[in-house]
Image 1 (cartoon, rainbow, N blue to C red):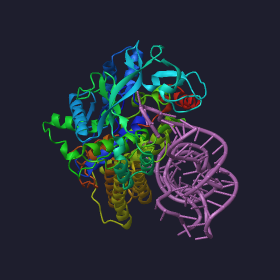
Image 2 (cartoon, chains in turn yellow, cyan):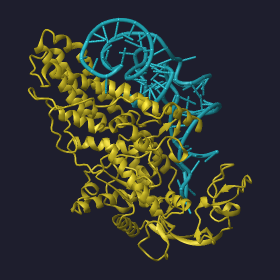
Image 3 (cartoon, rainbow, N blue to C red):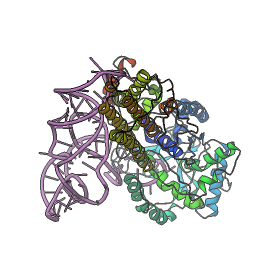
Image 4 (spheres, rainbow, N blue to C red):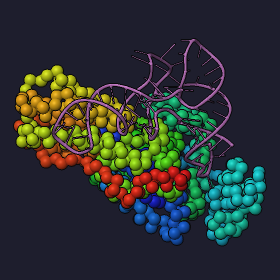
Length: 554
RNA sequence: GGCGGCGUAGCUCAGUCGGUAAGAGCGCUCGACUCAUAAUCGAGAGGUCGGCAGUUCAAGUCUGCCCGCCGCUACCA
């Protein structure tokens, strides 16, 4: 799972790209009976946080304190079931990161080197490339940044700039020597390439991207920064004010979070089952912009550390787009998640997003599209199926599951389709094809609807109650099986259905098999599973207006 | 500019190693049904797979060029 910056509200892109896929996959594996540990947390040391803090005149910690709890509320509302959602600001994380640093040092993958960097005397600190502006030596553009010229596009070094100025204070920065730890990343070119090119079942765009990157030859990278905010290095030979670069430190959260979880459980060594047992599998659900860190840098760090499991898979998603542009709250594309949570039921929203997972391509998801998916697909096909069968059972059999008579060929076919659905969805989920999985589960519901059409229990009820009872019994079995198939995607309503049909869901997820709905059992109360979304529910004209508005804005 | 990627039915998307008549859902049309949240079921219409050229017995699928679009550019992807 990606670690979000605690800098602002999340939007559908975050949910569709990483958190919901992860939750669905985790629920599925739990249903299979596997032990699953799902962890993530807020990155509290990222540059965006200090930048935002500077802007607002706040302390970085205040930003974190504002957004981290908000994230937790999203997980609760959407039922994204983390075992632990922590932050990179914990003592455990600090300890793990510092130990990791020492391990790399001990293994010979860190060395010190001095370089010259611009220093702002007025602000009293070193300036990142982007904080230096000046005239481009290539095209003469006046507002070129230290890393790149926006006008001619050439990549620059801050020292190339003519007449450099600090973006912070406007003063002329001076070059100063600074010493840093460097990470011997170049040592991992071969092993990474070897590892990446032998991955099977990975999404092509992930492998291509990572291989392309490593193939070009990775250079050593600075491991530390001149910053007070962050995790200080655990050695003092460089003097004070040296922190570990946030990206290297953030990914180590995957190692620290399980340890924190284990400590809280009172079984401090329990994390090793996930990290040191070679049989353990690890899946990193991230957006495609995070591929370098999860498919290249983090594996390289793991290799450098030794004794830890490399990622089993990095099923990175592409982007959820709005009006063709990547969702980004800061740029005003898409809406904050809270807006949707106020207007949609969690399972309905999960459905709409899952049907648009950008697994192999960017996927467009507008408000109108969400409404359409909920009303015309989820409510019409699945919600309605459950509702019609339950109400017929109520009407003809007083809500008691009827006793089936002799099964016809159609009945057998229907029952077979139930297990086929479960099997197919299982195969797709196993391959992390989550979007195809939910589509297959919905096809199962359509098969049940078609079965009802063929057998027309409302007609046979006039003449042959045994036949009617058999049909409804079969339909109830199909519904129960389908509820299981949908349970990773729609946990709340699936549980409702299963419980109404007499299945006790004991663990965190139902067992992955078609449950038997017993004859003679009285059905539990079960109203409509999902409310149809009325557009009037939005602020007047909001849906269309927003779609248009977003397009204009991009 | 560099790097990565995208352009397939009205809409959102699938199309594995190039090979049976190009697929799904929704929408639309027609028909059936009336148990059900005007839901469901069946049938059908609709695509020169962005354009041009090439490789091949055969290309949505490979190569080149062009057009349009998007993302990343984190102290070098």
